[in-house]
Image 1 (cartoon, rainbow, N blue to C red):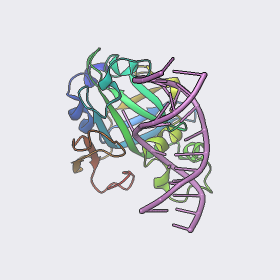
Image 2: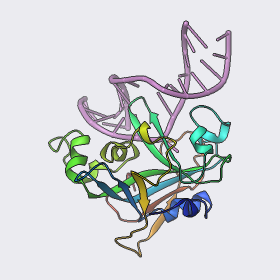
Image 3: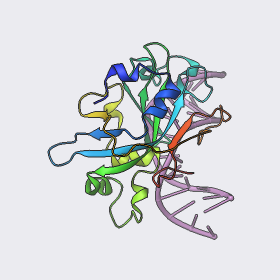
Length: 194
DNA sequence: ATGATGATTAACT
DNA sequence: GTTAATCATCATG
């Protein structure tokens, strides 16, 4: 399991890249555990106009100012959650958004939480976006401000190494569009968009 | 108290 | 390609 030490050892963009290939684990209970490989991430920096924390500390951005390795989960468009890992020392305000994952364990449960197997035609639709992966991995506000070391955490087990990383601009933002802070595993079919 | 906004998604045409 | 769904948060008055 990755510890606080790992999350605080790199700059936020470096961490975003290093999280690729790692395994996100949610121990949801005996026989209900969920695992998925991280295949797409984005970095949000303190002086970056697209970052929620760039306008300072508020009720919403408070978790981003907590210690590295803390979860920042928020509601977007009134219906989806986005999951981030705080990536800078206390008081700075940076995080890595987990944008897409590849399901490894607990697929049946993931289908259920995504609306049923009938509705999800392709397995990619389970987790190929930030809102989708939160539904599938059952991540919601319960984990906001929680350190990633108990029920929800990231493991450094890598199933495959030697993949190629693509670095490009981020998706779905209106400011900071020119910054190349998105990272994904080239050729992986769970990436939200090539 | 009110109004604008959004690190999205699914269901359309 | 377009658009509706849906609401917590935040700036403004």
